[in-house]
Amino acid sequence: MDEAKKLTKAEGTRLALRLFANYGKPYLRWFLLAMLCLLVASSFALAFPFFIGRLLDSAFKNRNAHELNQTLGFLVGVLGLQAVFSFGRAYLLNAIGERIVTDLRKDLYRHLIGQSVTFFANRRVGELTSRIASDATIIQGACTLSLAEALRHLMVSSGGIIVMFLTNTRLTLLMLGIVPFLVLSAAFFGRRIRGISTRIQDRLADATSVLDETFSGIRTVQSFAREEHEIGRYSQFVEAAQREALKRALARGLFNAFIVFVMFSGVVVLLWYSGHQVLEGRLSAGQLMAFMLYTMAVGTAVASFTELYGEFNQTLGASQRIVELFATRSEIADPPQAKSLVSIQGRVEFRNVVFSYAERPEIKVLDGVNILAQPGEVIALVGPSGAGKSTLISLIPRFYDIQAGTILVDGCDVREVKLTDLREHVGIVPQETLLFGGTIKDNIRYGRLAATQAEIEQAAQAANAHEFVTKFPHGYETVIGERGVKLSGGQRQRIAIARALLKNPKILILDEATSSLDSESEKLVQEALDTLMEGRTTFVIAHRLSTVRRANRILVLQDGTIVESGTHDELMELEGLYRKLYDLQFRDEAVLTELGTEG
Ligand code: ATP
Image: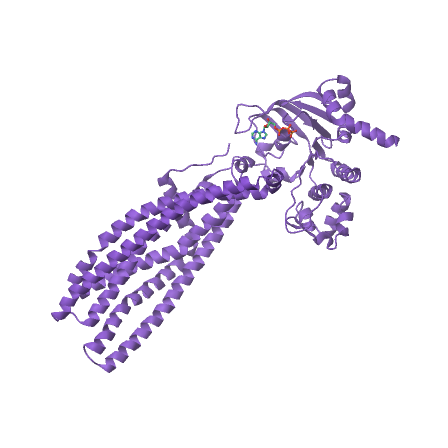
């Protein structure tokens, strides 16, 4: 069973920090350079109030024009250098962030795409895509903006306080009196805002899942005329998110008002006190101005820490979710000493196979199944709905592991061979063919990425697809899927067959489409399938009379066990379940075929 690991908070934080460290390591040198730029730019920022003070004193106190001009020159220099180093810091940190997030996205995708079928069955696709899209973006933001801001504020506030102490200890102590108010209110509001933000994210995730479901199932929604019902469901979630968002707006508003009030009150008290000092001749107007600017800078920096703290938590949350995904190990993976399976004959054997799905371990979907398929044999599977046919075929490419027994391919246990080798030898033509957005050529070439144009056309010809493909104005370059031409059911199947032909596997799995095609299309598909099956061990979930007639052996499955086995004629004589199924499923087809030949 897949282990979707749930981590404790401390464990999650530790792993999230390690994630940062791992991904940041290759860029350590750049990072140090960015820190140097930050240090220099912040020092210049700290020099700015000092020169403003001097500018004022040159004019009001010293009344010295030369000094005034000189100070202006310094100020322009300071501002210019600050701009250059700020650019360096911003560019470097952004570049690091972009690289980290790209590395992270690639690794995460590589990790996820290797997970088992069960893993994907247990999760919503929307959730996984959002992990790669939004959580990675949050981390990127943290690596760039938030981290840079936090460090800048830290430098400005600590540097500012030191400079202030050096200039005027008393005033500094007075000024620091407002810091506890800022910190306490920041902690109080910060916690509240964070809690609300999480709830907003949850509600928005619910709303997004409604979008996901209804857009992908739009036909169902519209055929049941449930648009209003869905609008209601969606509205309910976005309105819930809005109610929380309004609470957050209120908290933020109150917080801002409080901060502004405290800061300005502080400034007013400082002004009043320093006014007295100016009167007593202990402080110049310029020094006062410089002091005020430092106070503003320090105050703003301290207040910004709250927001940054909130972002830090959000980042930890995002990293933790990513770490959890990385911690999920697929148990359908290569064993330590996996055997290679380079070329095979195509012998498939099931020995006493017992299987149940992880979600319902108490129900044995397959119970003691034995099959021996010699290379090139065609095995048809029939049985009532839910008998276990699809499950049985999905075990051959090892989409799931069995609980007891063995499945052997050319005498090798499928659990002991390299997964990619095994799957290289198994071709699947499903009931519903999934074609990717892209050209027809791309879709056929999916069977063998290195195939040449000639090989692709050859496969299409053998699959009876060449003719219809060349009728499109763009031929093999025709774009299909969401943004292109839509293909009919029969055409899609033939593309899938061409794809499988190109792959050229020794073992073939066919899940015949239940929906019937018109007789012309049916004939073309059938011919293509006949070509495809030649020389391959084939397992087919049969829905057509012609298939069961052609099969070397028919296995009749009921409640996870094989209850009858033999050729069509043998089983008909047996008058058992197959006979019953035949009467239900195939007889009409037989009658129609006979009528067709008579007519
Ligand atoms: P049909 O002809 O209707 O496609 P089938 O013979 O192919 O049926 P399976 O799809 O193999 O039957 O299903 C066999 C049993 O396993 C059913 O009872 C089904 O509910 C159950 N089952 C199938 N897939 C899963 C799954 N992913 N998780 C849990 N149970 C499953």
